[in-house]
Image 1 (tube, each protein chain N blue to C red):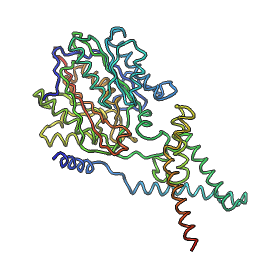
Image 2 (cartoon, rainbow over the protein chains, first blue to last red):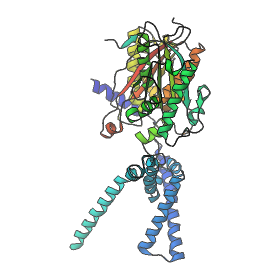
Image 3 (cartoon, rainbow over the protein chains, first blue to last red):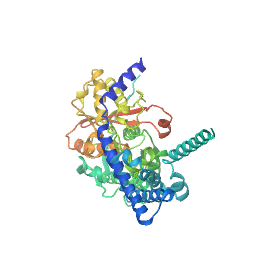
Image 4 (cartoon, helix red, strand yellow):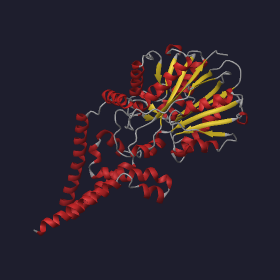
Length: 149
Length: 333
């Protein structure tokens, strides 16, 4: 009886709860995420044509510069504002990864450098690392096995 | 089974004090709040210290406003949202006053008032202080994400109030708003799991306490000038009215919610304010002032609390909630 009543209540709750505006969220994410990637591409062209970098060194240096920019903007208190507007658009690119590492490091600095900053640095990025590494290793093994035949 | 305590001697709320952060100061009720901070760190190094300092500040101020000295206070009853209620205990460390730490999440203010009223009404103590507070930045880090993380708040979310409120309860005679009865809430859980939708989790608890209170006291909702819930927010208030209508109780005319009142909702507060400081600030500032001016004479103060922790919600538990209803009236003695 109580259960049926509860599910009726929950139904009503989800009926009147405001919904996220999906169209707006998607558009914002597309444009901000796209802009970040565009900036990355310009950095890449710049490094390629000015310094003559190529291959892994080129993509590595581009990523490092983007990570630096993401971290700096987090430290300056700008990235969370971009994030509030862009949603997934600023989370998915590598700058978002930098933000997810730097923001808890800043937040938990008050608990000291070891148990605060260092230990809490990966509370948000940790799962991304775990599954990212796990995924890439699995793909590598499959690739290797497929290559045997 | 009755859940209401009736007070024979009707303890008086003789003075209050409130403090708030910059955002709350610019809100609808800003002018009624005694101390409005420009800087939400309150000159401290951490937000936890700032929350503690706000709580100490209002406790001190409320005792001063009552023209008493700290040594006249027989007991301090306070609570807050942080783990192990450190803000309350650490602020009590500064005072030479017996201390009771209480926790009922955001309904702590009404719980503290109820305990104070029982102690004073029974004649065990003559003056007690009930206080509570919260801080947006300490709550965010404990319950949600780091401040600088670029995340989006969902539209059903609320904003934790940076602020604290304190009330002095006394057996003194004279014209004061007096606590006439208190309905102790029951823990209520309708199965809401969305931690961003506290209003939906707490509305059933609020209604249950209001319903029990009206039944025990044999009153109609129209008896009260105001039925003031704690921090249901706009969505939770709609749900409360829906539940009330289902049971044939009409609170449409006199129900207001502290969370809905405190902010000019223009940025990301969405459904309004929340947190232990929300009802503490609104009740002890605006509502108390208006009661002293006899603009409101009968108020049912129903602060609401969601009794979850980050562990319980990560383990998939639903959100239990509670609300205590305190009846505060003018001119009863």
